[in-house]
Length: 349
Length: 166
Image 1 (cartoon, chains in turn orange, blue):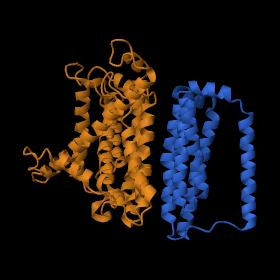
Image 2 (cartoon, rainbow over the protein chains, first blue to last red):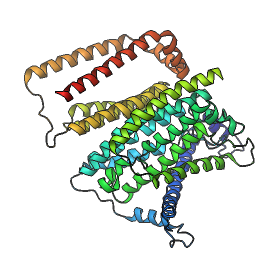
Image 3 (cartoon, chains in turn purple, cyan):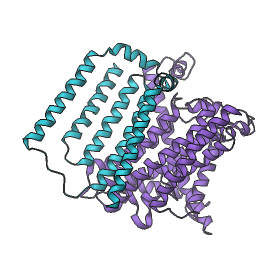
Image 4 (spheres, one colour):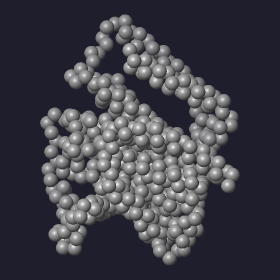
């Protein structure tokens, strides 16, 4: 980062003659703006895509009128509506916590974008503890969910917050265990380093590095990360049919939009982590360099996001006891066996 | 200039959180204040160039332990019951005494410790160095701690089960 900013301030470069402090400030602001842009575009696209996918899976058409072509303007219209709506704060809520909760959730979703590598040099900051950093930041979002559930002073919100706390703490363990085989295969925690270690065709991907064990680890990671981001069939914290909308029942206007944006960008982030860890990130599946890396990375992410949407409209929601059973008695033991199996495979074969 | 300001800011946040933990009567507010302290401490570790410790601090304390605290507090909460402050003298006196002892102990350690060498060691402590320390030099104490935790876990399960049967 420091070297990059220094090269930018050299004569003839974009920021020639600008002092180092000002240049770093400018780079930081530009990075934040880029991440915000990705989050906003991603949110708008995924809302539309989810509605289209769900509609077609149920033999409907979904939004068709706004913007003429398949209702492509629908989520922009929805976004403007949310911006213009009044943020209603109910009388008996804990006001500071109520207002802080969306900030915490959105902040954690926003900060998770920092170490995601988009291309060979396209990364906000290549942290040498990248994977640990993402785990730490995403584990903070549950604090926001609990705050929202508590502060709303509403029994549905409280139940949503409590379910979310239990769910996310439980599923952090299989997620962590399912990351380990990829980290062992790559031998680094830096996201960029993990992608670079998988260069040269899909047979070099971590997905196949540890025989059957890394394949299983990928599946475990995918299932457990669905629960981490509260997606169906693990969407108990916001179960519409029983909890109205769970922890964000009392939110409206832009505060609600923050929850929404955070959820969609978390979907995007877990898919990005899965494709960095196991699917070679921005590397080309055939080892060629015809298609730009960022496009390939985006295609992999959107493919995983599509599977998430597909799951949502295919599987019914789990019960609380089934949820806990799956985490503690199925995914966690598989995760432990996988770590040992992958380690043996990597050492012996 | 910037590092000093950051240190000041993080310390103030950490102390503010600790103070709120002691002074707020609502246990949920207290737990959330403690989360604030934990995150600020992680920031201080980052300033000491110990990113691994900072990340683990957030994952373990802010992300897991405090969430469990919040969960349990919400579970056992009785509405409109914030619990009376313990104003009866003996308990208050003992608490004050223990707090003073603990403070004295910590202050003693902090004053005696050679912080310059600790800071220098921290700057090179990346994940590999930590792993080598844990899995070679300190392997025995590390395994001992794991066994201790396992015993505690089994004990908790046994105690919980006993309550269920009676």
